[in-house]
Structure formats: C-alpha cells, structure tokens
Length: 484
Image (cartoon, rainbow, N blue to C red):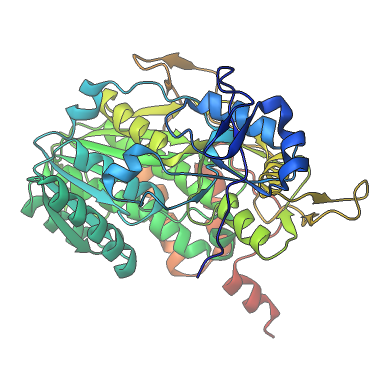
C-alpha cells in the first residue's frame, strides 16, 4: 500500500485568492514558496495545471527547481478521457515540460492524406516511435492498420492497447497484428499484396548506438537490408507512399548505427529516381514499374523512448544514484514522441519522391543540465565538490564507442522551407541505383563472411562523411582476434 499524502497548502498566482484559507489550507503566492515550506514542512508539490501551455509549465518548473520539493503532476483531461490513466494516478513530472515547446497546430489535410480510408502498415509497430504512429494513425481512421513487429511481447502490448481504444470509441478500423521480420522480403510482399497496402511507415530499426557498434552484422542486416527489403516489397506491391523514420545520427556518422541509417536513406533516394528499376539480387534482371513515393524523415532523440537517457535517469534516481553521463559537454536534440510522430505523418504527406525531410528539433540540450534538473525536481540535491553532502552524484563515464559529443541534422547547408513551419526539406547528394546495387551486394557478402574490417571499409566508401572513431568493437571480431 502506498504512503498517504496529506495536503498542507495551496500555491497559486491568482492574486484574488492569495493569502486566503480554502478548506483549511492557506493559499501562498509563488514568491512565498520558501515561507510555505518553513511553515508547513512540505516535501512534495502536485501540479494541478494539466491544461496550461508547455511554456507556462516550464516557467513553473523552473521556479520550483530551486526548492527541496519532489514535483509531480495530476493527469490531464485527454489522458483521463482516453482511459490511459485514472483520476487518482499521480505522475512524475513530464520532462517534456522542461525540454519541449508548445506544439504547432497540425495541418489536418497533411495528417489525413496518406491514411484516411486507406490500408496502412507500420513496421516496428511495437517500438517507441512505431507504437505512437499506430496510436495517431488509428485516430485518422484508416480502413486497415497492419502492425508489423518481430517482438511478440511488443506486438501484444500495442495490440491490446489499440483494441481497447477501438472498443471504447466504437471505431471501424480493421486491426491486424503481423509477427514478422523486415529481413524477410517475401513475408513483407505477401502482407502488402494481401491487404492492398497504400502507405508504409518504416520504423523498424536497431537504434542503440553502442549495441549496434558491438553487433555490426545485425545492424547492417536490420537497418540496411531490412529497409531495402521493405522498400522493394512496397515497390512490387504497388504501395503508393513509403515513409522511412530516420535519425540525426545519419549525418556525418561516427558509428555503425548512423552509417546504416544513412545507407537506408541512400537506398530510398536511389530507388526514387528509377521509374523501372531492376531490383537487388534479381537474377533475371527484370525491370519493375515503380509507382511508390519514397520519403525520409530525419529527427533527433525522442523523450522517454526505449534505451534513452531519461528512463535511465529516473531509474538511477530511484536507486539513489549516481546518474551516469558520458561527458560534461555532451548535447542532444530532444522532442516528445507524440510531436515527432505527428510531424512524421505530416512530412510523409508532402514528399514528391526521394525527399529528405528534417524536423525542427529546437535547441540542443546539455545532458548534464538535464540530469541536474531531474535530481532537483525529485526534491533532491546534486552531490559535488561544492556540495559534498548532496543526495545524488553525477558520474562522468566517458564517451562510448561511436558516440558523438553533439549531433547534426543536415549534411549540407542546402535546406528549404516547406508548407509546415516545423519541417524542412534537405537537398542532399545521392548514389545511382545501379551503383548502389553493386555496393549493397559487396556489403552483404562481407557480412555473410563475418569480414568486419571490410564491412567498415564498405560503409566508409559508400556513406559520405562516415568517420568511425576508434577500433572495431564488434564482439565476434574482438573474440576472434584473441584466438590463436
């Protein structure tokens, strides 16, 4: 049973009720928070302002950060209405309120163009971005929503959630969970043809930089060949729209993950320029009519995604620390998952074919400052040389293999505005499909032979700007070097 909280005071900036007593509790002005703490012994603050703007919540959190108070919030109306939470659910403060910005109103026509009354497939449907895409796609009323996912558990979770929403809101969307891997082109083609898929959102990818750095072959097979398979299946099935979820790590990459995502972009760019390409590994050299509009959307980190720093910091705070940060100067771009998914859908509707869209991520965030804010908003203090008696320390662990101090969103400076203020279009170099087919064949051969040195060299030769930092750290490669 959880501990019982006892209210001791109200804080409100409404001057008409300041210093009044309501239900036996005094109302304090924000400038009197320290006085309130001393008078009442308050240890926590509950934010009961779910409808306020993100900018206003950020102001309030900035004010509260300087006090030894654990800040939490009550859920908003939309979360209550959707059934995701109950009225008595109290949540940790939304870190998006610290890093995010007020959302730009969505353009309904862009949201609906590739989804409403159409058959839509999402790969990686159980992942952080994929699952949010599914939630938003469902709201836009497709005829069919296909959840393509290789993890049985993740597929079960998103399926259960969406089925409840369909039942609760009496939606007429056909929801189909498909277990499968993007490394199986025949399965992808079968699914797309069977349900006459109109639009594909390709979110399936390995994205954890150190993990892919230690498992190079799987990164190439999933991120490059998986994208190739999904794209070729879409082309053969006559899919109209194909949207790749890409990453800022594809720009001048220093790691395998980023280089594979850039190569995935290059694959779609090359296919987009072919009206009748001969597909990869087609022994009969048969040209296929290409009616698919391929689009790529590139953005930075999303708040709270699996493997990201914020869930890690929450866990470390609960266990008493330390919070681990790789470098004092490391920065990252952040965006909330719902905002990213909504912008992806809108960007995907604007493409003409071969477009690389870049989302406006706002200003980069210093990770050490994020760690400090999260400690403070938990009602704790940072332990440091200046404050040796603080509650939680921040420990610098050093950059991991392939990790950058900062990320970029553009390879060049050739970027143009679009009809959406948060979406830009980047004009970047590409490789012809005939050339890329040969390079992909060499890369796949090197992977099959476990020749990781050759894999790295082929990635360097193909992906402009790829500059791996340090030795190859693939586990198999390293172990074989140790053997006599």
